[in-house]
Amino acid sequence: MHVSRWAPSALQALIVTAALLPTRAIAAPTGPRAVDLRWEAPDGCPAGDEVRNEIVRLLGASEQREAIEVDIAVAPEGDARLRLALRIRRPAPGERVLHGDDCASMSRAAALIVAMSIDPDAAARNAAAQPREADAPVARAPRPPPPASDRPSAAERPPAAGRPRAADRPPAADRPPAADRPPAAERDVDGALWLSAHVEQALVPTLGVGLAAGGAIRSGWLRADAAAGVVPSSSGRIAGQAAGAEFRLWFLEVDACARALGHPVVRVYLCALGRQHWLMATGRQVDEPFHRTAPIFAIGLGSLIEADIAAPLRLEGALHAVAPLQRPRFIVENLEGTVYRPPAAGVSARLGLALVF
Image 1 (cartoon, rainbow, N blue to C red):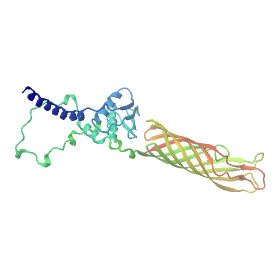
Image 2: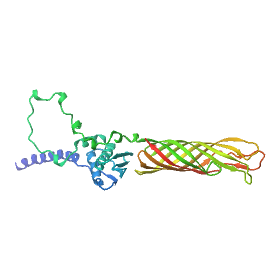
Image 3: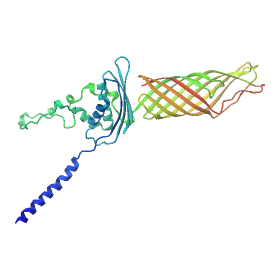
Image 4: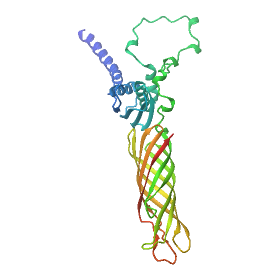
C-alpha cells in the first residue's frame, strides 16, 4: 500500500515538471541588446547612456537582435539652435540631420529614428506606451461585465491591443518630423547642386583657373556627379620664339564615387571619372591667324571631400589625376616646333559650395 500511494505521486510530479520545462524555456529572457553608441553633445544635453537606454526601451522584446552601431553628434548652430547629425552604421545604414533648440527632445527623436529603422512595429508600440514609474498602475479588483445594453457599440470600442490611440501617442515634441523619420535604407538619398573654382594642369599649357558647376546624387555610401566647366585662358608658344597660341578649355565630366571614410560632419570618397574636353587654340603673333579645336577624352582617379558647414550648404573639394587618351599636337604652319601637346598625365582640382536638398 505504501508503494502504491507513492508511485502515482511521483508520476504526477514528472508530468508537471515536463509540462513546465518548455514554458520556462520560452519565457527565458534573451540576452542584453548590443548598442554601440558614439555620442557627442554639449553640456546640458542628456548623457549617452540615457540615449542608449531609450533605444533599448523602444525596441523592447523585438525579435530583431542584430548588433546596433550608431554615431550621434549634437553641435550648436546659430543662436540657441542645435544641429543633430545621426549616422546608423549597422544593421540598416542611413543618415539623418535634425535641427531644433531642445537637446532632450532631439535626443529622444534620434533614439526613435534608430529604433524605427530596425523594427518600426516594436518602436511604435513602445513609443506609444511611454511608461513612467509615477504612472504605474496598481492592482485593482476586476469589475463585473456591464449589462448588454451598456456595452459600447463597434464604433465606440477601444482599438485592439498593439494599436495605440491618438490620445496615447507621444507628443509632437517627442516625435521626429515626418521629413526626419527613418525610412528604409533604400530611401536614404539626397541631391546637391554645386559651384566650384576649377584648377587645371593636365590639359592646358600653363596652370589654368576656371569654373565648374554640376549636380550630385548620393544614396548610402555611393555618390554620382555630372558637371561642366571652362578654363578661359592659358597660353603656349614655340620654344625660343614669340609665335604661339592662346588656349581655352571646355569640358563635360561624369564621376562615380564610393565613400571611404564616413563621419556625421565630414565624408571622404574615392572617385573614378570620365571627361570629354574641347581644347580650342587661337594663333598669337603668327603671320596667318588660325583657329583649331581638338576633342580630347580623358579618364582619371581621385578623391572628394564633403563637409557640412551650415544647412543646407556644404563645402566640397576634389583632387584628381587625369590621363588624356588623345594627345594632339598643336603646331604653327611654316614654323618648326610644337606650340603645345598635352602630357601623358596631369592633375586637376576644384573647391566650392554645394546646396543640398
